[in-house]
Image (cartoon, rainbow, N blue to C red):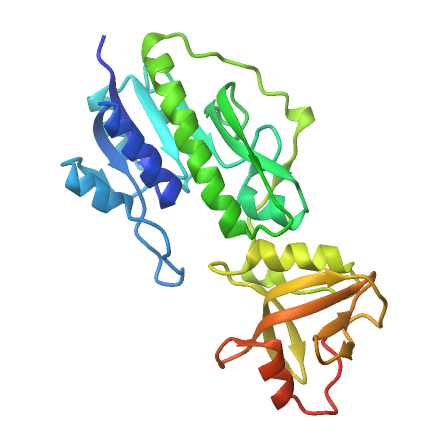
Length: 303
């Protein structure tokens, strides 16, 4: 039986998982990936460059397009594997993989199905997440589970820190599961959707700080969308200010009001938020001390 595969991949998870498959001698016949967006900060590795080095043909248009669907049909792959590919793959494409179509998701399913699961896990103050390999069905992140690996989230971790851990876990999962898939011995564990949750995508506007929330909640938001993501933001004196680094403290103060200059402490709905690094729109990022030196004395409240 042929074990030809088609891979859909992007981002660091896509790069590392494809790299692992190639190290195991996988017969990758075609890669679907994405063009980098000019509006997105590209801080991750290029799957296209990896494909080029290994002589793998690649396509950057949607796998669901009729001409691409026919290319997959002609290859007649045993498996279709998706690693952080951003397009939902339609059932008529999934069924072209004779032995199954599988996706690597960046959470410990069924928790955090859907978009940007790492950011959501950090924003919600979770203490663990993971990476899961599962069969793809029409409903997103809902098919049977093959393998998964837990990842701890430290209170000091940013989403970037956790994403790197999840990437390592994804490679571990693929490394274990691929030989089992080839041998036909991989498990198929039903997904209990009632035990999980689903999250939608996030836009930069979703990073707006609501000072009536607790200091811990705001700290989790800051670390959940800090570099290389767009950042959590507020306004001061009519100017947008991005908070890149913060820390929660006990204490009290009116939400949004600066209660201390050194350290820079701001009142919240519960507790105080220490701002350690921030950036006024169209200016360079700076620490709190330098920011306070330039702050107008009359401006004492974030909005």
